[in-house]
Length: 176
Image 1 (cartoon, rainbow, N blue to C red):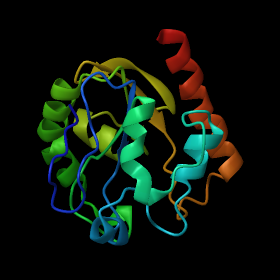
Image 2: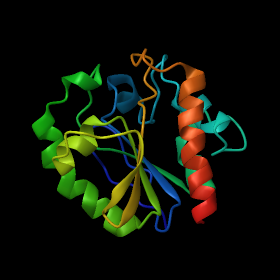
Image 3: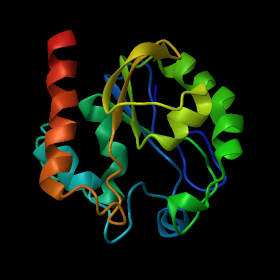
Image 4: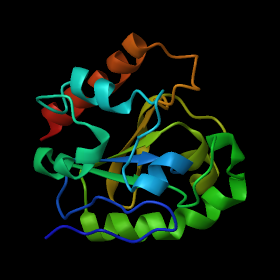
């Protein structure tokens, strides 16, 4: 049975026993208005997800619910939509931790992949984080930190994003 939690901006796409839940920082204004994850013109999430091997074909943002069929889920650390992720305050991430932990307790995914370091850092109080797998679990799930696929993240080319996401895919496949 799938679970869709109404959020101030964008519904979660979760179900029990998922392999990976991708946790964005917060929804973009356009994505929240349309009700679909990673909708922004410059957002590279969907092509990167496919090229990294998580989906057998490119998923369109309006088909975001189809990821459940691939063992994947989508949520946001903070529900408040903004134009840019840097408009979310650190304390908003910290305050959202309990809600995210509740979602993970219900869904019990194998992995949670935070898209960017900001949310995980604020939720755990950790200041020094590396990309990739983290040594501790969060809500019972193994933790992986990925670069944010937003087009505003110019520090990562699409190719580098694919490499980073493919590393999680390989780890996920070997742990299944």
